[in-house]
Amino acid sequence: MQLLDGKFLSAQIKQEIAAEVAQIREQGGKIPHLVAILVGTNGASETYVASKMKNCEEVGMKSTLIRFEPTVTEAELLAAVQEVNDNPDMDGLIVQLPLPGHINPDRIMETIAPAKDVDGFHPINIGRMAKGLPAYVSATPQGVLEMLKRYNIETSGKHCVVVGRSQIVGLPMSILMQRNTYPGNCTVTLTHSRTTNLAEICRTADILVAALGKPEFVTGDMVKEGAVVIDVGLERVPDASKKSGFALKGDVKFDEVAPKTSYITPVPGGVGLMTICSLMQNTLKAARGEVY
Ligand code: GUN
Image 1 (spheres, helix red, strand yellow):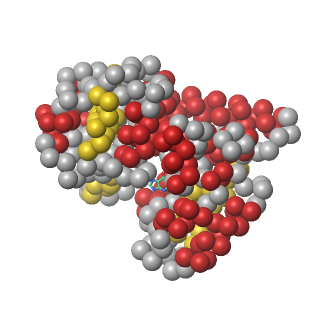
Image 2 (cartoon, helix red, strand yellow; image 1 turned 30 degrees about the vertical axis):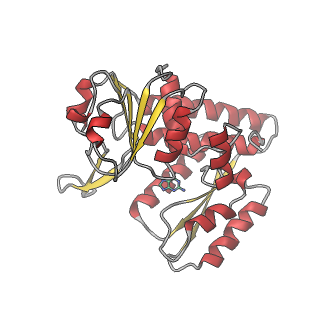
């Protein structure tokens, strides 16, 4: 069993991004600028956004956080998105999800200019990704691909089982893994909460991607000997022994599953760190006008 070390890889990628930003600065070019919109005070969202901003600063990019009260109207939020769209200094925009119930996330996503949609959530980017055209790809699936690539993991002809059909992870992951480029060329099964015989299907996976958001759902008996297991889950589980009051758990019961695998991602220290790198890579592309 080998760990897919997100800590090591993300540090390497951050160095690469920092070197590119430094070069842009030396040549007097446009410093990449990421803008995040955060509504309300959801603890996990606060942590994620703060980490995204901090990482941008660390590689020398500009970052701006725009905060709104949870009572913000949809019209106010749409106006803020439009302002970022129209500001040539701002290259990438993310609106952190989830949003309060009175705001339609699809309407917000569809208002972000596709050329600034570094989260890859706009239907144009999802459609272009599905067609294999240049597009912004959702950060987490892109981070998983980067991991497979940097560990030279063979994917062609393999059976990839994705558990979870979210718009952000499961669905794009399944599309990316079946494309005819590396990493890809898999036979893909996309499973979800209505799938019958889920454990049986998981046991046929050469590459198992767990992205359903249920702590330690994937147990040892659901994994084939020698499989590659990618754990996208990151849930806060109450734990009185921790200072924060919670422990972070993935979707995979690591201790049971790890000994059976050829490669596995730890949580934390796996996919999560790759996600932020993907977002910064996309912001760099946006500043350079590489996608559109
Ligand atoms: N909420 C959970 N994951 C994400 C993400 O990748 N981007 C945004 N904008 N919100 C999220």
